[in-house]
Amino acid sequence: MSDRRVKNDCVPLKRRHVLLGGAMICFSQIVACARPVRSFDAVDDLVRDAVGKGEAPGAVVVIGHDGKIVHRLVYGKRAIVPVSEPLSWNTHFDMASLTKPTMTALSVMQFVEQGRVALDDRISQYFPEFACNGKGDITIRLLLTHYSGLPPDVPLNDPWTGKVEGVRRAMMSPLVNPPGEKFVYSDINYVMLGLLVEKLSGLPLDQYVRLNILEPLGMTESGYLPPSSLRPLIAPTQYDEQGVMLRGVVHDPTARRMGGVAGHAGLFSDPQDMSIYAQALLDRLKGRPSCFPLRQETLLLMTTPQQPPGKTDLRGLGWDINTHYSSPRGDVFSRHSFGHTGFTGTSLWIDPDSDSYVLILTNRVHPSGGHSVVKLRHDVATEAGRALGLTAPV
Image (cartoon, rainbow, N blue to C red):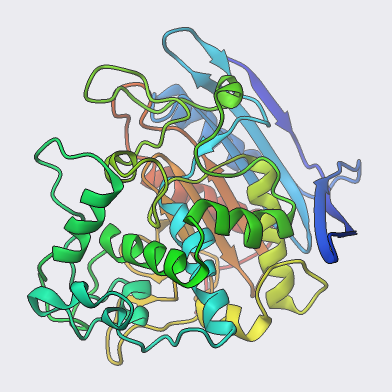
């Protein structure tokens, strides 16, 4: 098994701005430099141990701090079957639910920033048919924070296919709780938010994201529905219902049945592009020059608690802050930190207080369902924070 590590490396994100079609576009690239920073051996040991135990075929870990990448690790395999393939820095991953905050919630907040929509608008104002089954009072804010009262997903126990049927099932969904009462993580929330982006923009969701997020950030290796030419670089996930290995086809069954583009899943990306995203977001929050396509005050709304008053499961607008999903925070990143996970084994946790982020990309479901990486996420974040000199928040 290969161990492709860059130990104690310093990798700043260099940016250049180019005038293209009358718009200022920000391109980013990762450039290595030789200055040693600190030891992240404990992080590397955790990853090697997890891969050795079969918790994931391999893993990419990126640790950013003070405006640069201070450590990255590429270890293990991209694929185990049908043939073994080594993991590489340019491996593309199915980002799964990281699609929700990074693309869909950001898209919605761009319309909020423009005054095209308000957070406390009822979603039924835009989709009257959604009001059935007691859902008329669900707001955009409740969808973004997963306090809508909707169930976790649309029914998948019969072999339906097609976006039209997926949309119908989302629209017709019953409630499992009164809106605003309880935090229940639901893909239906983000199916509806993706539809809202399409309605407001007049574009398919993947096209809107490409034009308004990926291209402005210079995320040239990211997108939905990756072409077949890219598949050799994509980490496969698992066998589908017909026994076909999913590779370059979204793992999430609802997004897959809807054609591969949905508000809750569908993005494919690589370590470099996701590092660009995380750094641009941090730069915007910290008031540094940034090409992040949202103003600082709007981004602050996304990354601070926005759940209904008195509720203890803390959610931003798209981002997780403090719920039972918050294991990627570890023990030492601040209470102001936030992040998200993806079912396939991806996670990103960002701490503006320490100016840091931890990105972990795995295809832990390969080849037949995989194992949990919850503990790995927690422990890597803890050791990364300790290596950065952080102590447990009070």
